Image (tube, rainbow, N blue to C red; front, side):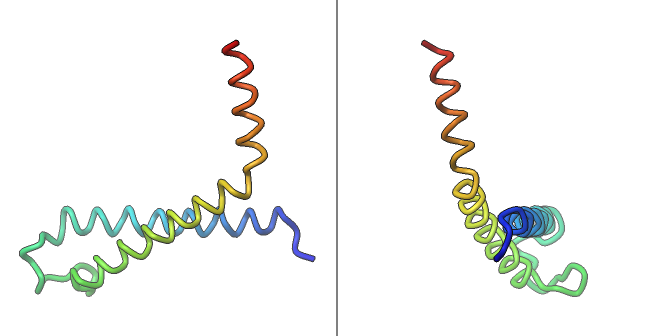
Length: 88
């Protein structure tokens, strides 16, 4: 049986990797590879490939955040109950 903490660890590591890829590729696209520079590459990778890396790592980040929130739904639910209770 797979332990829940291992699933959580895999989600967190994958989320960190996807976020770093998305952030780095976004910075490369913004600063190093302007839209008019299709023939220029960064680290030997063309602008088109950097754009694909950015889009797919961003999508992976969104999906992994969704699973992370689902995985910790009870925590989110309990915290919302606690904060709603303080306001009354």
